[in-house]
Length: 60
Image (cartoon, rainbow, N blue to C red; front, side, top):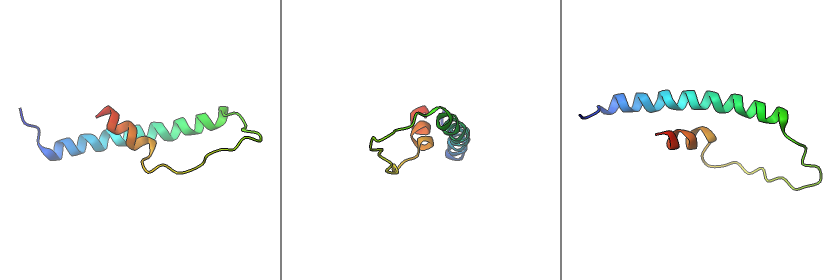
């Protein structure tokens, strides 16, 4: 059975929105429980894909 492209696109968007909402809440919780780095160097470079993008690709 062939799935129509608009239906598939809508499903990807639905998955992305749910994953993105989860990632936002998860980041807030992680910040609450994160340990201080102290004198250690912390890498803070922005990734080209967001956590939501990567998670959606993995789920799909």
